[in-house]
Every structure is written in structure tokens, then in C-alpha cells.
Image (cartoon, rainbow, N blue to C red; front, side):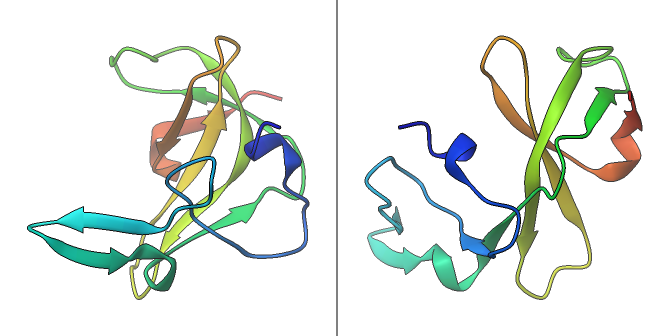
Length: 99
């Protein structure tokens, strides 16, 4: 089952690394439980966004699947799924509503 498409609009779900919901990250031989640091809030609606700038995805339109938040961080990223199946996160200032 595709993990991102199975999300609902109401709960705040932990961010996952793998399909098996593994949340341990190995960095410098130290196990880090990123569920304590990162959450992915599912999108209430499937809004369309156009990517600004001149990067690889510039001008492309993606569907919002959620918002990626770091605990105690001022900023967040909007997570988009593109027609080719790619999933990427962008700062809100790097996007324009496309719908």
C-alpha cells in the first residue's frame, strides 16, 4: 500500500523512513528516534502548488500531501507529490497556488 496516499486529514502522524515504519536513524553510530523530532501532518485538502525558482522542479505543479514539521522549528515544508510519483518538500515561499 502506498503510505502517503493512505493518510487521513485529521491525525498528526509521525514521519517514517521506510515502508516498515522504521524510525531509527543511524548517524555516527548513534540511534536517533526521529518520531520525537519530526511529524508529517496530512493535508486536509489536495491543493495544487506550482514550484517557483529555477531548480529541477521549477514550473511543475504538485499535489499537497501534507506539512512536514520539525519540533521547535520556526519553519515547515509543504510536501508535494508530482505526476511522475516523486515526493518533495518546499518552503511555502517557494510555491504559488496553482488551483
